[in-house]
Picture 1 (cartoon, rainbow, N blue to C red):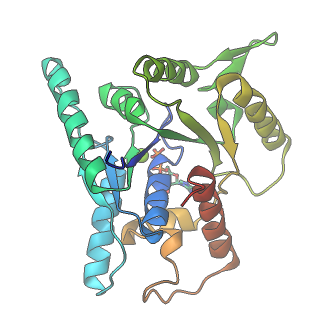
Picture 2 (picture 1 turned 120 degrees about the vertical axis):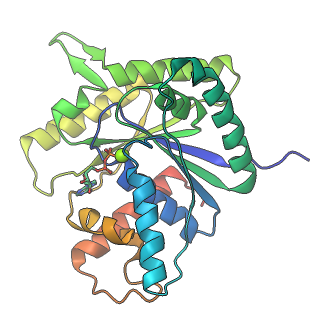
Picture 3 (picture 1 turned 180 degrees about the vertical axis):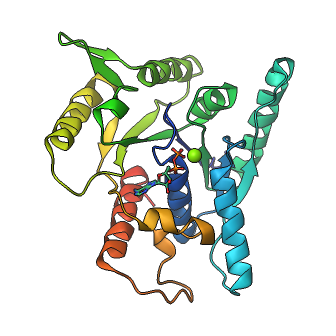
Length: 263
Ligand SMILES: Nc1ncnc2c1ncn2[C@@H]1O[C@H](COP(=O)(O)OP(=O)(O)O)[C@@H](O)[C@H]1O
Ligand SMILES: [Mg+2]
């Protein structure tokens, strides 16, 4: 009988600050709450945002005698010596195989710029989530227009190569989902244009567009305690929920269900 393999979800965009680590932590919490065993691989080990997020969570739970669910964490930093890269990639492949045996889902957080860990993380993905700011500047990584036609941006070109790599290896097609993050609550011409363009190019580059996550202060505030909006008002956390908190919980659940409809 073949072993059930964990689903690998990579969070990637060739741009920093789009919310990759924040979404990685929220998605992991959603899947843990669904009863899944979850590992997070932080391939942005130098910055280590998601690693620190999890450290903060451990500390907060210990200090407050709380028992929220925790993902398994592996932090990876790139080797400086380029002669070690091939060996390091083989080590990572073996480590991921082992994690796949021990977990139901693996979430890989990535840096905002290309290096060999970024490439490996994308090659490993069954599903790729790309958070993107609701600005035409941010859209440039996917596509830009020279007024006559759309041209693939550098990240869309990179993903095209990843898709070819998967086909050559006989893997299933990549499930690529793009999600607007820090989306303004206000309606504006920019926002309308952004989502029109995103929808248009989704057919060209082969991704699906999930409903966006709004810009909310709560996503910035919870890092020190290592909490996510999904933890609010659960398991002994007696904070008052505002309408914005409830809406945040709802939009994260909707995104997670869009990504993993079977869970
Ligand atoms: N939906 C959101 N609303 C408000 N702030 C957000 C949201 N998502 C992320 N942030 C903030 O944006 C910044 C970048 O987020 P981060 O997850 O570190 O991005 P990345 O991992 O892509 O570099 C952080 O300050 C984070 O708190
Ligand atoms: Mg990050």
